[in-house]
Length: 214
Image (cartoon, rainbow, N blue to C red; front, side, top):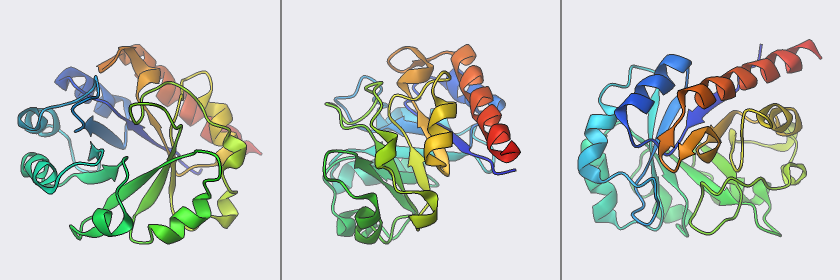
């Protein structure tokens, strides 16, 4: 069976990180962007990430961050995957010679296949809804704009307004490598619901089973 990986993003509490691991998340994300209501200060990152077991990836999300701020965050979570959401060029994303994922705001005229070529050094792309504040807006974009899996050359992570109610439809439409959810598993920004996380994960696995049965 093809398994869609799950990333729970916007973590701010250790109890939510622990719950995400128990539920089965492949990755947990921490927002290193001060204007975000889900911002985690660098000095808090170590405590949040230190309990992650092997094969659960910590992801640090940056928006037009300075080199100093990125390095400061990495001092606390040295094994993190970097995720860039701002106006970073391919050269800026790649300059640390470490794995990174590039978020693509699916605005009119954006071509994901062209983005794959532009960010050739990335380990994957994250397709997200263009909203003010760089993510966590709880809105979908038109999934029909994503090229079919057979045409893509990089793993695709699907984000933007996903919930337990719609993630099955999203997986059927896009066939992503992974799905990324933040506001769809919250009671308020940065405060996750164990019930919503469990329901979301169960919906993903149900969608995988449905795809396998076709």
